[in-house]
Length: 264
Ligand code: PEP
Ligand code: MN
Image (cartoon, rainbow, N blue to C red; front, side):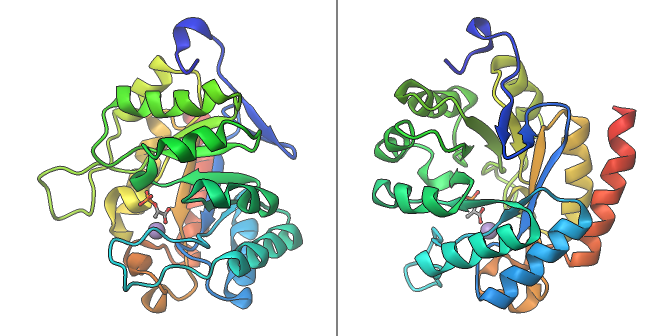
C-alpha cells in the first residue's frame, strides 16, 4: 500500500484546508516540548506570523534517560489545542503508546510517531484503526525498506493518511547529533506516494545547521518541514534548545523559503 508501483499518484493529505503532499510547502514549527500555556501561546503566535501552518509540541516526551523531563502529559495536549485554535494553526504531537492514541487524537490534528517507536508495532496497528493523519519518523537506524514497512502497518490497518519523516540517522559522525539523510527525500518520493517531511532540527542537532539543511531539504523535494523553534531556547525544558531556532531566525527562514520555492 505504501508503494508507488500500485499507487502512481501522490497522496495528498487534506486537513482543515491545509494540503500536505500537494503544491504547497507545509511548515510545522514549535518547541520540542509544550511547557506552559504562555509558552505555547506565544510560540503559536510566532509560527502563524511567520507563515507556518502547523504547531508542533510534545506533551509526552520519549527521553533517553528516565530522570529527564518527560513532558507535561494531557495538560499539554489541552494547552496546545487551545493555542492552535486561537492562532489558526493545525497541531501535531507525539504519541508513544497505543493507550494514548485516542486522547492524543482528540486534541491534535496530526499524531507523530517518534524515531524510537518506528517499530512499535502495537502502536502502529492502533494508528491504523483511526483516520487521524500520522507523521511517522524514520527509526535512527532503519533502512528505507524497514521504514516503508512500518508505514505499511498503519496503511494496512485502514488509515491512508500517513506521511514519512526523515529526521536523521546514526552514523560514525559525532559533530552532528544525527546525519540528516537528504537522499531519503528523493528515494522515498520515488518508492512511495506518501508525503515526505524533513526534520532538520533532530537531523543535525545544531541550530546553525537548521537553516541550510531546511533549504537543502526543500531543494531535494520535501513536501514539508518540521522545525523546532523556542522563544527562550537556552532555558527550554528538554535538551533540544541547542537545535531550536530563535523566532526571528524562523521567520527569516520561512520568508527565504517563499523565494526559493518558485525556483524549484
Ligand atoms: C521530537 O520531535 O521532539 C522528537 C523527540 O523527535 P525524534 O523522535 O525524531 O527524536
Ligand atoms: Mn525535540
